[in-house]
Length: 546
Image (tube, rainbow, N blue to C red; front, side, top):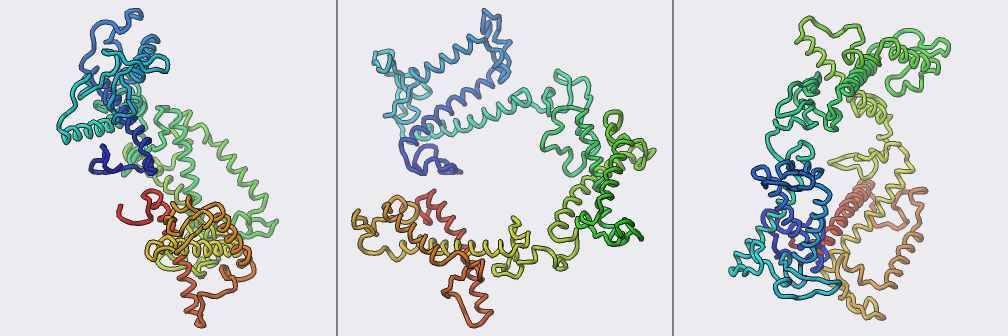
């Protein structure tokens, strides 16, 4: 379909979803008809959005309902104004266009509509009623454009304009739904919930609440609310969230300090005399959780309850300023200086929330919240850093954390699977390439079906050519390889070692080099064969000129 109408710069033939990969001409014809129809409807819809801004019919849209054309709003708001009988007329009109007035004859080119008269299941041809064929600009029975190049240019322009109109009308719907108008100056969209303030008309009389002017709106991101929590213009909800943000930020600042201080100072004496636990016995970070006695946890929960209940930390946003518990630490007589300090508290609290989560992760993974990675010898990630396959430039690379548990058995099992898949992929990659370069075996792959090796195409297309008995042989061979080689190599020996040596050497360094190369080549082959599958499925060949 690369020579069809609609293939235009800069994208050329663009089919990212692969609708045309099967090469079905009927499906392409049907989709092109739908595309042209939707494009024409969308072009009319775009004009229908624009024209009422400059002109409306005089008189009544519905005399019985006393609705004038001038009273009908533009865009989505008009949906609720049209009376039920009006919608009935709309549906009848669309049905008439689909069935009779704009019929697409499957024998004619896409978009070449004509009229027809259908009674029951029979098409009736009556002069003057059916058989009209629309010419340029929809004029019935008008002659086609004689110049073939000019005609092609105009048909391409119609498809391009229709595509643009489909995107435009969806954009108008969204903008209309969000702001109350399909276009215009953003400053005029005073009724939009994105404005964060109420009032009507072209300019609101007041601005009772605007989160965009609250504390915490700072460079470089400014007012940042990607999830739209504040878009409902609810001041009470905003204050509650601000109170929670401040509380969490303060707790995290204290927690961050609590991670750092014990590296430089610990209290003398006993944390728990009854348990014989000294302060110096308690490790830093997450490891401390297992050292604190049960009564210590009771004390911590009791203290947190006192702070929550006795100091009014749950009512601050209801009765006053979020985060103001009645005792001042960050304050100033200078309003500008006070605002600067409170904004700094918010920013530092946000940083501390990110920092403490980072410390938790780093502590959980490495045994410490910071320090030189070379010192984290106790980390489970260290268990496999010297295994085969750890190579430059990425080194030990386990982004999904499969090896984070340090389980040697699980690592060996995965290494076996990796080697097996790599070897199969290397063979599969060669199997894609060899028939293109060396040709195929002579003779028959299936005598009973008179199927020659030369008749089997390369790549995915071969799947449909292999007879059922051939698939049975393939499955039987795979089963034989699996069962005869055994699946316990990773349990009782070296992953991938099935007893027969191909990559070996008397020199241990040379042997390790070869085995590492096998892993690297297997990884490359796994990526390569997947790429070949995709390219073959999309283009019909695993390589070649697009």
